Image: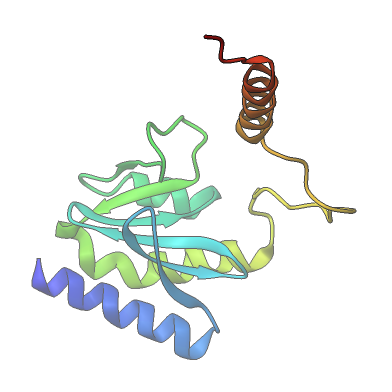
Amino acid sequence: MANARTRYDTIADFMTREHEATATAMYGKPAVQINGTAFLFYMLPGMAFRLQGRAREQALALPGATGWAPLGEPNERSPWVLVPVAQFLRWDRLAIDALRYAQEGQVNTPKAAPVQGPPQDPPAAQRWRDNIKTLWEKASNFRLTR
């Protein structure tokens, strides 16, 4: 395990130094991203790579490699492949392939649209405001009698 973590740290350092990537933590796991798009994750069972095409198929063919998703169950079209620690000597090539995929800009990630004006209140804030307004109305109608 120590050799695998050392290999990940070396890869992450290389990516940040040579390719202007950013080492970060996402979903509680160490990750590397470029232009806001994560392409590497490290966790105890192995390292996850965001790949496409032949590189993805070759990674899935490695012994113990499986599909993976950062937030749950992967579907068959998920670009993420979890490569086990036993294959950590192949991580360098897979990391370069994942970097190329992320740099090509074909990664489907949500894009934020510019907002005009102040943001709308969330539904919970509206409920709180309505509840407080109702309470004030009831309190104003409340009279103490003797």
